[in-house]
Image 1 (cartoon, helix red, strand yellow):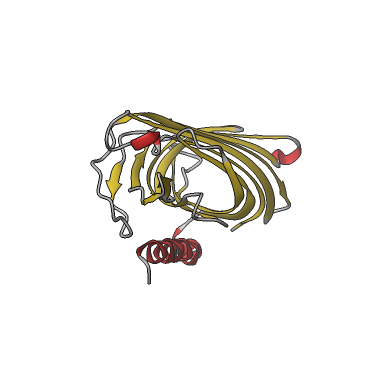
Image 2 (spheres, rainbow, N blue to C red; image 1 turned 90 degrees about the vertical axis):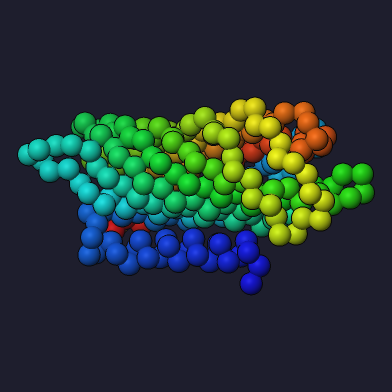
Length: 238
């Protein structure tokens, strides 16, 4: 089994494990499957669009007591699979965090580990297999419920990116030094509506940007990356 596929299988297994442990250990869980369009631009190359699936799961591991208050403790993960991995990145992520709630509003911070399987680049007739990126992210998460019975919800999540850890692709034939990281960020907004106790629908938009220095590790700025993802899907609450 190829390394990327093996990591995807492990990530999906972790999400299934989370779901299996909901009844025994957790207060509340959600899982949603979304489909939409991703657009990726590397360097000065024209943007390429394609279809992507996005699977998300989150569990409330500890819910604060009504008497003592305090934050909720959450854990979750994400698997993102494009239909065309030659032009778009595959991603897996696991996170844990805390959230402080008051009435309809909650504000929290997650600690997230994300791995991005970068697509190959083609430069002067030669294939350049970009290094995969391993990221530590600390996004701020803001959620707001509104409408009758608080069935509508908004969520905003975002953070600046830290210097990635570069993991050499097993397919790499040209070995380059790691590019110098300049800056990066991601921002995601979601809106949704819950139908009864179990089901909900959700639409999301995410933008992400990475910029690296102009050096030998970043020929023709092929690591510079701007990505936009828009999805819609359905989810279930446990």
